[in-house]
Length: 294
Image (cartoon, rainbow, N blue to C red):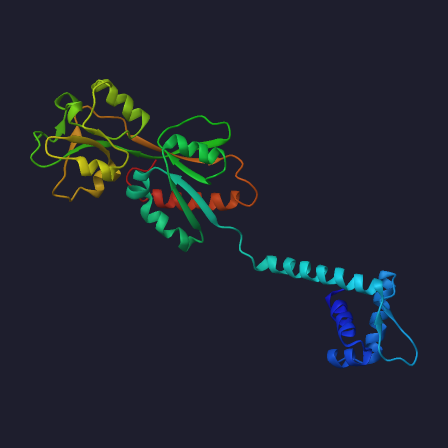
């Protein structure tokens, strides 16, 4: 049995006549009759009632049931044929801290639709991103801490040096400023990474309050005023290097670099492993263009 058998039987039933069915299908009556007989023999049932001298045919109860099932089969078969024309799901959920999206990954993320991806971006903190990847709510994660999760693979992709920034008119004139020249109560504070935080706590008392705690570089710059200061990774510094309203200083006692890690689930699920591997290749090609890639 094939789809033409179904079409043939449907033509017979709709016209109630083998003669009219043969005209509609542009086949001889004998060809229609022979094919119908072969179909009945294949199925082992009688589909129509044949009576001598009566041109009008009647469908049997089994014939009605066959037509119902055959049409369902044909619809399913057509869906199977359409599978070859269906593109695999290229949606990609990417979880990343705000600073990385806006100051590092922006140009790469904009290219993803050209590369065949449909990205969905979620900006979160590092620990939240681990949970998203661990629960398979995100395909790819970027984080600033190397945590240990049984189902997650982690690799370092970026290491950025840290500088100090302030406004013109601030008291620091040296190219390299020592941490002892800075007061925490004048700081616009943003937690960049655990390693940078540890260095920070060595030089300034953790119990001392800064001017303000912020979560994003944009908020940090909004609060930055003459006489205040902030710590910034290279990607943020580079964005404001030509800004006359920002002064950039090195630290005489160098902080550790801000390290960024790519995290992936060990078992991303059916059909997604190849897509994520292809994404990694594109990502690595982009990261190699940056001065602080690993």
